[in-house]
Image (tube, rainbow, N blue to C red; front, side):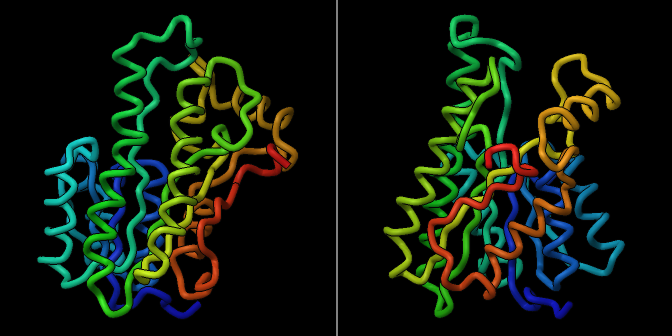
Length: 255
């Protein structure tokens, strides 16, 4: 496949592990310069090392997406190093109070999820749009939502689902607001993916596999590479007419 992102700069938040790391690697393999962001430096450095091992170029920047100053500094660092911001993937997220009902969830866990999963996406969008709208070729943004926010039938996920539903709605509204600025915004909503977050508390690998065979029409969890492929499609010129979409990658669970 031709390198769809040669000469472009892609920013990925939450890129120290899981989907974020997989997305960062996928962009690098298609020629992008990649800026990886997260709260902890060590995992980011590991992602950069993986990219550089394959001949790519990457920059690690520590940032807390719930802090506006951190997000503005992150965008500035990307532009300072590579000269532009062509693609942004807002993937950073937390899952506090795993397995708790609304009645059990602590207020601080609720606020932390909203701060990172919703406000963090808003702050990132604002900083990314401010830069992209000044560029002749604009830019593309992909927010990582969740199939739980699209159609949740899972117990004890109400708080997390509410935040991810907000990301989906925010994506659609921002997409309509800013397509005239040359900024194209979409979302990907993964279902259970082969990362640590897809396990239920205390669940084993075999237990997760058995559960997915029962719950998912495709009979397995999605791979990180499959989610990354959806993100790259939406960020690419192949999706030039796709605006405000939420692409669900969940093996048919919400079909």
